[in-house]
Image (tube, rainbow over all chains, first blue to last red; front, side, top):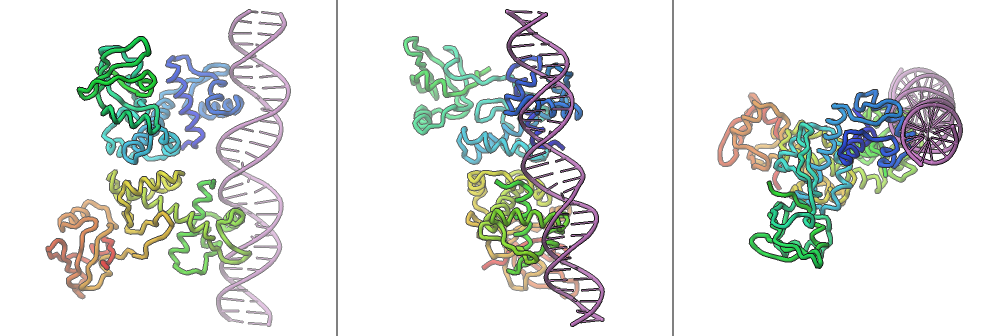
Amino acid sequence: MLSITEENYIKHILSLILESNSELGIGTNELATSLSVKPSSVNVMLKKLREKSFIEYEKYGKIHLTEKGKLFGMAIIRKHRLWETFLYEKLDFTWDEVHEVAEQLEHIQSAKLVEKLDKFLGFPTIDPHGDPIPNEKGEISTISKLILSEIEVGKKCRMVAVKDNSAAFLKFVQELGLSINNEVEILSKLDFDDSIEICVNNQKSRVSKKFAQNICVVVNE
Amino acid sequence: MLSITEENYIKHILSLILESNSELGIGTNELATSLSVKPSSVNVMLKKLREKSFIEYEKYGKIHLTEKGKLFGMAIIRKHRLWETFLYEKLDFTWDEVHEVAEQLEHIQSAKLVEKLDKFLGFPTIDPHGDPIPNEKGEISTISKLILSEIEVGKKCRMVAVKDNSAAFLKFVQELGLSINNEVEILSKLDFDDSIEICVNNQKSRVSKKFAQNICVVVNE
DNA sequence: TATTATATTTAATTTTTTGTAAAAAGCTTA
DNA sequence: TAAGCTTTTTACAAAAAATTAAATATAATA
């Protein structure tokens, strides 16, 4: 069994790889920055993780995850995002409160717990930040979250998360009749101030660019 | 912030005190046995916990918790039992599966999480093993769980937990129309084989002593 | 009370985990 | 090739938890 520190190393390696979405692997320095430790500390841990077959790397080379490492990392991200969903949906945490607690919960060891939690939540595919939740096989949906302000005119999308949590913002969201999983159609954009005309529940409204930048959506297929 | 090991020491001290239900305090050896470590290891830790004001003790004396220590210990037991209730009630874990996972979950640090979880579960007072859940002030209900076979004839009680989890047992429980929080009245006992006649939902049944020993109840006030 | 048995403490070590500084080595590129 | 990065090595440090073995105190009992 891995220590929490080891788990976090693997999680950071995977996150960096996913962010860069390339197969080039990542560097020692990069990982050290991400983890807020020195490169020499990373180097020590890399040897340990290689020994345990979670990563592949050669001296002065780039860091790659093995299949085992990738599965393991995905499992942690899966747990993290399922717990965030639980906190947000069932316990009424706000979206900006969930991360810190999920950082702890993601290290709980119980395969059964993860699968039961997934079922309890109705097999969610997106977490409260709009990020995809890997499935039990470690596969992650390619549907990427976008912000409402980036969607083209004429498209329909679905709200999956908010980025702001102030009372003023949430009150306005509610006034628009907008909530998680609601369909939003982009009717028009005004070049003058980048405001957007949208349609929610057959109700047309105009929202500012700033507002639209705080709504996460996925485009409908 | 305390380490998980420190938390477990405090939890074990409190548990031993509660079990012995006396104010005499507990001994180094006793605690060492409970934690599966050597007495000398306990002694080292005791100094640390005394330094941090969680316990009171003098050389060769008995171990007592300070008010701070007692509150802290109760908070851990509270978390443990709330999580057990969550696993059992919401995630369909069986009563014998919940403990192991709750041992991990009890160390998650978030006051908000505990209070939200408590609310989500409907402020339960008894866990799936029939043990009382301390409230947010660290107070524990004096209602103690009993086993059905110990209840006197004529009394009414309420089922709070089961002790066996075999399919055969649970099937029979179900056939009797018995479930958590159901009222059970003891109609008579047969001295010959200690079997018991009970009434559940206006339905009389006779159950064996062995069966009755696997049903936890609290007596109705 | 003296003696034995048990419980507790002390002190010196051990193991494990994680991290660091400093210097050496390799890579990149102008 | 030299300068400026990145990466590795090595030796060290600190913290947490536990242990062994010996010494000491307390409790039990003959």
